[in-house]
Image (tube, rainbow, N blue to C red; front, side, top):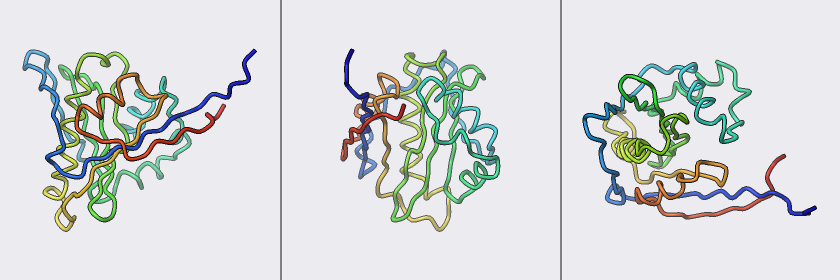
Length: 181
């Protein structure tokens, strides 16, 4: 029997210029992929994706959120949710969380399990990162984006870290700690 304590490694990554973005190939028109901004803050929509995408990835921190807490988080100037659809079916999402000093965090990003491994994620991440860089164009009074950042961990999908790096994100911090049981 091993005395090894399970660990969780978290990588924090960033881009500091729109020129850092290395977009994935855009799926061909036959794939039916389109990405649309959910302009009305909707706790139900974001909760659906949070549980649908994160259910097998151990996403738990938002599970106890009330509808009011969800709405408080989503209904802020500059907060955006973009949804990827394949032939009219929701496939995944990306949340852009505006922060002080021109920073935008990709707070959540992922695909429903049925849509993983089909190159949709690279396209959605590319599109969402570009929207983080041009966020101020849609939100008058918001300062221009100077940094886009994200974190991923060893519990996320096996391609998550590589997808971020292929899109031009650079690791700026790595933390390894005992995993919660």
